[in-house]
Length: 209
Length: 363
Image (cartoon, rainbow over all chains, first blue to last red; front, side, top):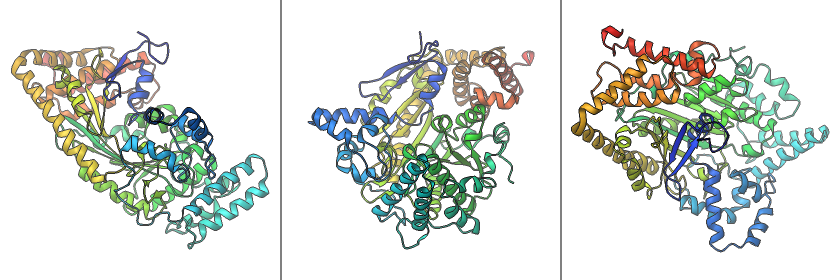
């Protein structure tokens, strides 16, 4: 018997016990078996496409879904279509921008919409400031891509300003030691990375054995 | 400059979860808890530029290295590792396959006991993990909760008042908590009860994955039970559901199956287990699947007192040391599949003979 995903012989026969349609047997080669076995949770894409399929059945028309697919997050630029295909969101703001669209999905997955667990003592309170930061990072990347380094440098300064201002909700506190303060403000530009990474990432030097 | 961490150090030691100790360790291999966290103000990994990833990595690393009591953590840059080293960390359960196979800046911080690991730039910016041997979720939770608090004291997490900790995949949102218990259930496999048991669990919000499931020629009889939902329950509720409601029931079924096997056919079982030990101790070439299959039988034999001169810890260690990357690290060189089969057989022989499990004339 051949592996379901390639032409190698299937040496692993894995029973997935919790598939919606009942137990399912997978016939896989060693490589693909490892890929399947070593994931620590069920494939999110399966869960999400399953939940979205349910959503469709629950009354959303094809046209409505097509419209939804084109919806885009103003902070990170991800479309709902992109999310639906990858099962991954683009930024924390997506939970706000796509809130009404994600609600039925979250109910399908978790049967709940309210977090009742642990809360961080200092949550990122101002959502707008976080969105601004993500938008700026995206804009900086675009400026670097188009080789507009002057613009990129201006955006970098703005990011540093936000992250360095303790009153700003996007503030990232520096660590206790003096060096890390530099780390926060010094590494935000595309050029400064090469400067600071030299002595900063020992594990990266000759890590491969 | 700090020297890159030499992974060979880990090979010689046994990780926390390989000890074979802790409550219910005859059936429960390990208890693992992981928290998914993301930094506020950064896009999720999917939309991160390489520059963003580098910044995240550096920010997290600086904070982790500054944490009290974390002086001796080892920080490993995954991007610069060889394929074998990445695979080694996957086998060791210190990193996920996903982070091993992805690209760009990504790292893992590991404590010397291998109880903690923090993956940086996996599917989420941070994946914090604590692993214990046996069924030991409460103390694992207490440890990870403290570490999470300490990290949160230094970095701003993406959090939504209604949806909780925000994660790249909506299946993790809320607590970001995944509780996973790895079980060894040969009794339920032999008595063909395993599917029935798990079908009865389906209505509860847990996911059961058969690792090397039945229906296979070679099976290690390992199953992982995890919580399915992460939103709408407190962390303690999720721990209770997996650790106090579901897992003890499965353990109970497994014990009953083992008792049944002992009562109905102790000789058959003894024969089966002894043959397994015989093959492992005398084979000249053996694949990792076949090794898993027979080690699983031997492990059950040891736990039932049918084999009394091999330690469970030895068997657990053999499970991991016979994996492809471990074998190559132990040998200190790359091996082809065929060479691995030979080296695996040699390794098993050495360790099982050393433990005195074979009659003198074979030693």
